[in-house]
Length: 221
Image 1 (cartoon, rainbow, N blue to C red):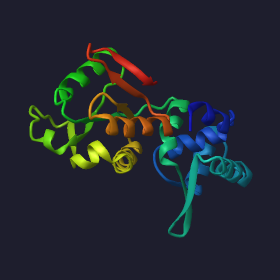
Image 2 (image 1 turned 60 degrees about the vertical axis):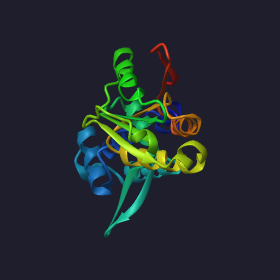
Image 3 (image 1 turned 135 degrees about the horizontal axis):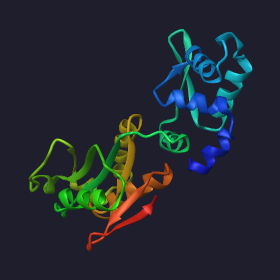
Image 4 (image 1 turned 60 degrees about the horizontal axis):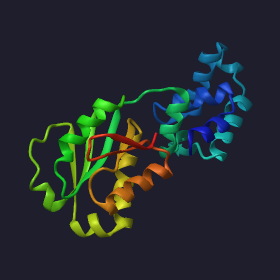
């Protein structure tokens, strides 16, 4: 969901902003959310009506921003994973950045691309996650603790868009609860780049491409 759509769903309603801000910390029960609303509007908890809480929870759920589930005996709510980044942007909440890119037969991107991103953008990734073609993995050197490699068989990396997208999607699901995600489509070949770019489009994630001249081009901002 785009930032514009998230804004329309929230509609300037303060209770919805409070609920979403609280849920950015993780799943919460109705009791916790009611208390959060009470604190923000400076009212006793028993003056926060069911209508104020549950009507707005239902609105957010009906519009695909949150999902509700049973946690033991209580019902809880959480933000749908791929709405988290847009919700953060709307509420102006920062999170550490996780970079997701790829390395195919171009091992130089391991060091050159992060350097250009840090030089030309405001992004300062905490971790760099690379999908790496298995043959290229053996040629990589100079790895640091913040460079995390996810090795992929060559037949998937270069030829199986569906499986490659599944791998990209699953990693992003793991990261997005605690990180803002930056997608880079510079390395890795066409299939991997398309999988990464498809993820960026579907879930409104920022996406960059670094040219051979070292210029960072925004595919999505």
